[in-house]
Image (cartoon, rainbow, N blue to C red; front, top):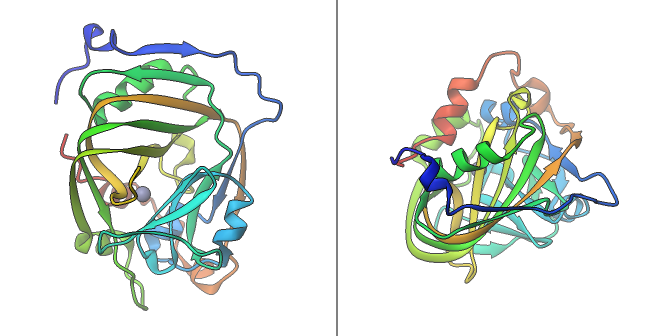
Length: 260
Ligand SMILES: [Zn+2]
């Protein structure tokens, strides 16, 4: 991993477009990350209902059947067999976060950048780290490692157990879009504090929950979100999931395996 130096920041050209949005950008959260960690893999929210809440976001499907990418109003499913399909409107999600994407900041990257470097650079530029940010990176990726989880059967095991059997994918020279959120520390419990990256290639042949990447060049668009709506599932799995314990370690194990 390269150290982030002032020199490495020089290629990052930041353009602050005065953020004058007519409406306060809002993010919609369905369920909580702690419920998902506890094995509450079923929700009642349909893909069609989710689409009404935003055109950009990430999540998963019931039984943690693959990774969800919401991009330009379409909902895609990257499955553990490596295929990408457009989700049907009646598919259900146990956990998702969406927003109406709005660009407040735009940056350009023109040299190889790892996920850690990308996160460090964004951290240096985002003035208010207590807001949520939607992040869209359109670019060429020299390398990208993702994962997807195969659908689970009841009784559901905790996510940290399930991800031990996740399928890893290594993509090289792929063009596509990273769909991500940066959540503040206080989001612990209902979302993933820090960065959470998903990917979909332009040809819809690659995707997943991103574990490592090497961006060759691209455009980063960032939108601040200060208004949050949270909807919670009404089922017994959610009701009985233990959300009183600190699941920070489990979350690290689930989100991690980063190789950069
Ligand atoms: Zn994910």
